[in-house]
Length: 121
Length: 109
Image (cartoon, rainbow over the protein chains, first blue to last red):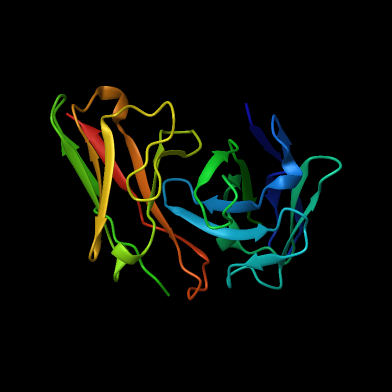
């Protein structure tokens, strides 16, 4: 069965950087669009970014555009999120998620358990 | 940007039917997906494309979508259904390509 495991979260000061990773297993990683979604504890889900199966196309929410970079290494079955110029409002649990099926605008069929990012001085 | 509106909470007694709404402008023209999130866990899709159920999801979970409202219906509610539920659509005109509703906390009395 497909599995996604995030890592790399932690405490960082405002203005700092962090790189999240999402290790994929149990499926052909290179065949799927992948996304990052975040959630402030106790609050709702907010979409952050997506990347094409071959890495050729990326999209970002306006709130992170120019600060975050999504990437992937299909040889290592790993998704990344490089987060720079972090702000207090970026504090959240970050989930990686897979879009199921062949349609890039389908639903998220697998999610990781998330990694907590805390931006605070 | 496109906005999805859900009631913050819904309460229902065991064995009864819970209905969770998701309102959006002409949401009936979009495909709506529903996720269940138990405390401390990742979301799990329970209904996709308005009314389709993934394998492993009980038939008690169903969905509908028309006009300006999509609805997740949970029949014969069980204690284990207590969770947060989020609706989701895609909206290419939004600054958020993927839009989630604010979530509804289902409480089983």
